[in-house]
Image (cartoon, rainbow, N blue to C red):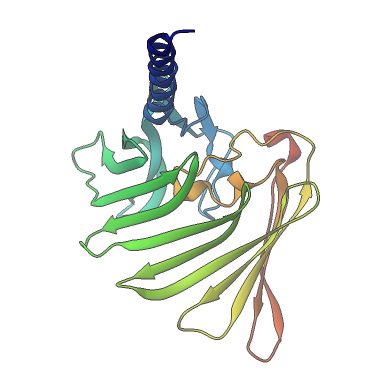
Length: 248
């Protein structure tokens, strides 16, 4: 083959490679095509009637553009309480490997100052900055062992706040996580058990902080126990929660 023809083919294949690479960056699959997420997937303890409410994800093409549904303080008989509502939504803006989330409301009486900036490497989130009522963000940094999240560390103004270290069983499901604090000597251990055999619909979906740690497992855990460990080694069961198998 003549030399100039080789150069033409080289530029042709290089152009295809760059096009495919840019396309992948532009269509980073944050939501995995999921349309709805029942809120019993969330780890918050204030979830009412978990079989009713859902988070809804909207897309433009394959790109996630908004997340509808969230928690807000609502007046109830004169006493504000936190409820899940469809009036809350997140705007999602993707630019390269950076993602911005901004919490908003369809109800003008409800306002938020919550904004998050996410940094991805491939489809793994490696940093999350949370801005809320201040320009000084809380920064979450994530470290991985292959495809498994190994550690999450939290900082503010470069000061260490806390960390979570994640441990998995041989089936690839989250077995436990250990929470350490920057200002306290005690630790807490969260233990996950009673896994079903059904695939976890939100595995790998970490765009919302509330979806951790459930998004880390291959299957769905049906029981979670929280144990507090004092500096002396004394252990106290602080919380235990279960989910019904049919929910998943």
